[in-house]
Image (cartoon, rainbow, N blue to C red; front, side, top):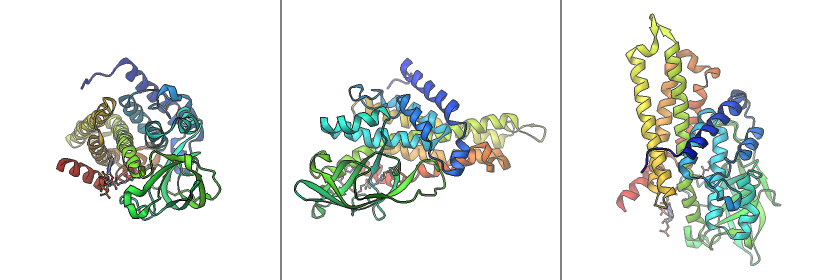
Length: 379
Ligand code: CAA
């Protein structure tokens, strides 16, 4: 594994940093406070090629590697994780599966517009009774001969209200358990689909999270993604890459909070000196720096394995677990270092701390990552 970034990877990181500082930072507090969807910012993300950066150029994507994706996700997440989760879900949970398992017709119809950022994708796996326990899908897609008939409810769907394309997971043969689950690619405006109210969340408040209800929705046969019964495997494989995205998001939240705390500690004085000169604060910053560096290598290792075509499921679970736990610790310490100011919105760190919490929950809780890791150890 080469620890030096290529010139192209550095350029992508710098472009993401520049975009985040210039176009995401202004207004981020207001978007968070009022839960305003970052419409213009997501449009720009598409124009800059970040929404489809992992998709091959032949399908209108950026054809970039996963290491570059980690770098870009970190920079964007330092400033606005509501934007980076939209980018992560579109790239790794939706586009990846279409590129890997889709027919040429599906790639033409669904992948290209998402890779260009003209359309946004959402991943519909979770249900009220099937979050961590993902095999317990209750949404049904009954095979009616020339189409599937879908009924059920999906929950906590990122981009649920704004996405034009849904990657839907549903049960066709419940008697076959997870071998009877299918994946489908559908337009979000099909008759019978309705979207629940915007979830009023603790963090990532600007990203739109909704329930999506299916009431006798007809899905043409050709919209099934992959082979009959392959849906659960497609979902699990998609999550392996998705977890690299969320790990990088957690890394960005941690490094963003650390940078703010470091700067604050060098400016703020107590007892006649800058607070960084008090060992209590200096040691906190040292611990934060070490844990962020470790999280960064976990993320880059998982990305590198994926780019090399090697198995990366274990590495992505480790990266997500470690980076999410680090994000929670580091953002909490950043608030502590800021003292009373840390509890005030304009200093940003309280928002980063609220956002860090979600990285321990979505795309597999920290506890689920430990299941994945420990089963891998037994294998
Ligand atoms: N790749 C391929 N196949 C896999 C796999 C993987 N990574 N992981 C499991 N499978 C297969 C297994 O091989 C098995 O198939 P076979 O019987 O043919 O061997 C099948 O899937 C079932 O596996 P398990 O018996 O291990 O299933 P389980 O019920 O014990 O649970 C789990 C496995 C890993 C805990 C899984 O349920 C899981 O990952 N849960 C978390 C779900 C999750 O991450 N949800 C996030 C929602 S998405 C989201 O948050 C998006 C958003 O909007 C931001």
